[in-house]
Amino acid sequence: MILFPNTGFQRKDGNWRLNVYGWRFKRSSRNKFLGESSSTLGERIARLLATPEQIVYFNDTFQRDRLKPFMVKGKKDEEILIIIGKNNNFTTKTDSDGQFRTSFIMSDVDVQKLKSTSKKDQVITYKAVGDNADLWEGKIHLLQRYGLSIISDIDDTIKISEVLDKIRLAANTFIHSFRVVEGKCVYFVGMPQVYHGWKNKYNCSFHYLSAMPDQLYAVTKDFIDKHKFPDGTFHMRHFHWSSVSIYNFVHSTDTRMHKINHLRYFIFNSLRKLVLIGDSGEQDPEIYAFVARKYPKRIHKIFIRAVKGETKNDKRFLKAFKDVPREKWLIFTDPINELPKDLNIK
View 1 (cartoon, helix red, strand yellow):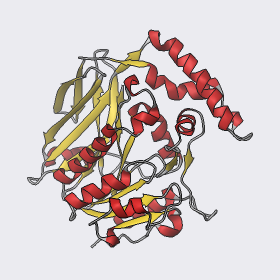
View 2: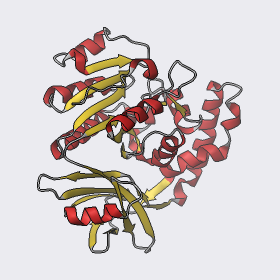
View 3: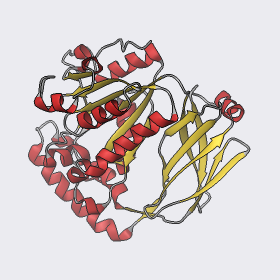
View 4: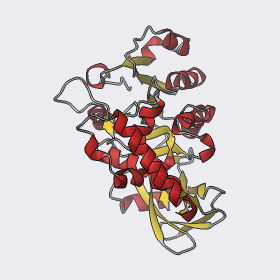
């Protein structure tokens, strides 16, 4: 079972809407050969693109670890018991993919009790139990009605994926060691430093909204932790083999709606200001600008990483951000030197 870190929103009455999202699965023997053959093919592709220094990473074990979550079978119609605190139990059922999503209301009194026992001030934990009685622990990040939330894409925004190239995307996803988006100055890490600067200055929450498959959640979370990005919630999509490829999956219409729907959920469930960060490799400029036009008072800033070195005067950006105030959006290539340390939050 995987429990994805999710959000808890404080309501107008002071109580909380807590969201739970998980995936229940089992090994699938019929996909064993597919996993092995995909591993071999993926390794061959990556070797064609690799530098001599990178070859050391291309062994079967390394790649199969990333492929394994794609080769399991979801357990459908299984009852899941959610246990939060001593007196709050909820039940839900898995869907045809083995996934389950639910939300429930909890009083502020109960939430404060849970916070008092938590290691992190704005994070509470819960337990989930399936039909085998194993206990799994999940996290809910608590968001008060007012504040600042940073909603960040992952691929080509904070992690190099090269989503515009089918082969390089596959290789970067399944073979290459994950690489962080860096600044031009060798003395600074890049995106992690920028994010921590905002975290320290504004005590803002972080939410990683990605078009990539949630089957990659575990390795993506490892990347976030390894490079010391701020802890946060994850909002990814579930991959089906009908999508044919990761490239088609990432660039589909469903990706656009996935991001728009999550942004709307943040807007409808709080009064927090949102800073949106993405890149030009996907549809982020068009998606973020659309939301900014719809909800101008809620979108505070938009930052877009130009993966091909485009400038703010690129025709695509001028079209995408039409009617969005110029001071609200910024195109950048170097996070350290171009992203502001001061977000002008009043």
